[in-house]
Length: 200
Ligand SMILES: [Zn+2]
Image (cartoon, rainbow, N blue to C red):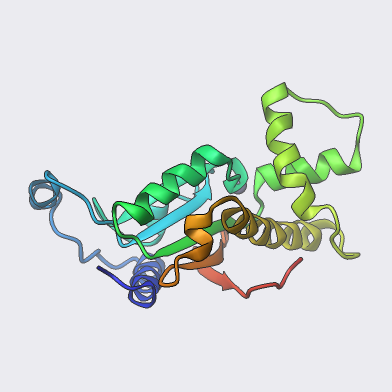
């Protein structure tokens, strides 16, 4: 089993390769498929935004079988996502969970828009998504514009981490499990860890 610390190092090294544009060190996919046909042991779970510009396997330079990825707009975690993550921890042995937000997140932006204009409306399902994000970003500081959005992105990462702990005894109580937050920059391609408790 890969420990949380080793898993984090692998992710950060993979993002460095992605940034540098260097070839990945993963096995050729054919050999990898053969090795994985009877089972999987992903070393990390990524709960990320569904944004097409933030695919975890690419930005962390990981191949088949390495990452257990769950994605929703704004990395919203309902019981369905929690169940998927619990499966990866309980049955596949992953010991690191990274909640991955990103700059200029459209789901966060839409929620700020709904806060600013309570009369705005969307489809019922998009509104349900916004209502899941809203509590985590409704009490930001005085920042405006781009800084306000950046603060909201980070606050949304922290809110999702709290949802993981609050919504799952398994994730909250497992002592060798680490849950971290990170923000991917669309501008630079870099992943930055966010410090616990900051940005909210
Ligand atoms: Zn997003």
